[in-house]
Amino acid sequence: MGRLLAENAKLGKELEAARGDAERAERALGDARKELSGAQKELRRESRLRTKAEDARRSLQEERDTLTETLQLANKQLAGESMHPVLPPKAVAGLLGNLVAELDSQLGGMTVAAGEVQLKVGVQQIGEEPGFVLPSVERPLDPESVQAVSVRFQGGGDPSTEEASESSE
Image (cartoon, rainbow, N blue to C red; front, side):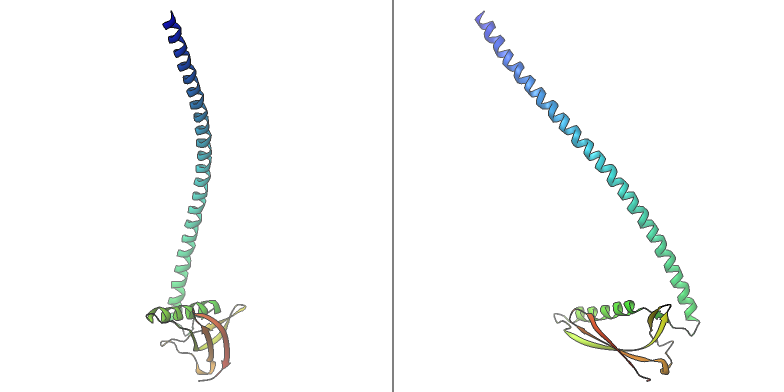
């Protein structure tokens, strides 16, 4: 009978330990379900954002393709005309920045600290904005309409000042 009481006490302790383990497992399961629910909500939100981003990308690609076709058509039209393309100041600044950056990268360890570029260009309005007309070998500008534009820059290729002076070369 003593052994039975000891065995009963031992089984009672094991049962109590098993109940504690079961309670901890249930709490862990509840926590895991909450995490899963949160992760599912986050997944749905991210999926919606991805869909919106893909729609925006598709729309931008279509717009880019349309603009590319328009530009190609305009270039073909300009090729047969005596007209010159007019570039806004930002585009010219970008071209000059690229020129200086390319010079800088090709100097093998040396950097362009400062410099000046003088352009012979025409100036024309694009709607309300003034723009630059760049001559080409195929379509030179009328010498009477050419102006000299000097652009000075300091290291890094950022144009710092622009000075326009009229000249008829």
